[in-house]
Image (cartoon, rainbow, N blue to C red; front, side):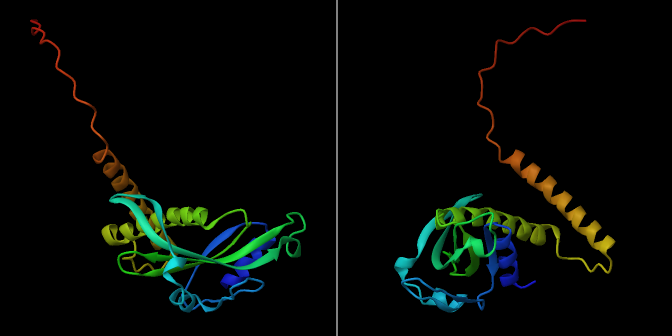
Length: 195
């Protein structure tokens, strides 16, 4: 299913969405003061430094996960066109995330009620970022993508085993990184009991 079809289905259902798209996905704005048109990558390259906002994508193992974010509103859509039960205006937008260290870009199309702002969507993408990091860890450390299954059962067994190992690793890492309890002074030594 193409992204635009998924967007239509979600709008008809009255659901907000954030969907990842490629850099060559085309965007066009209408009824906005500053027109936007072209591929997501071309739009990102045309942004000014003042268009970017540095926000935390949540706490990571090495501190806050900071990224630069840009949000462009593309169109206001009347919900009545799709869903008579949920009237009101929805905003369609383009959200761009730029990695601070290497400048890698990620693009997202979104549909939201206008009262929500880009900061909330950046937070929701932070959760998605944590999930992406977890999959990357499962692939690199546990071989999630190292299977040549020819059947659903083989693939299912491999993925289930890797995810179980990942869950165990996460639990062990959580315990290992836990703050130790404060030290207490030893009480007076009691004499050993004799049998």
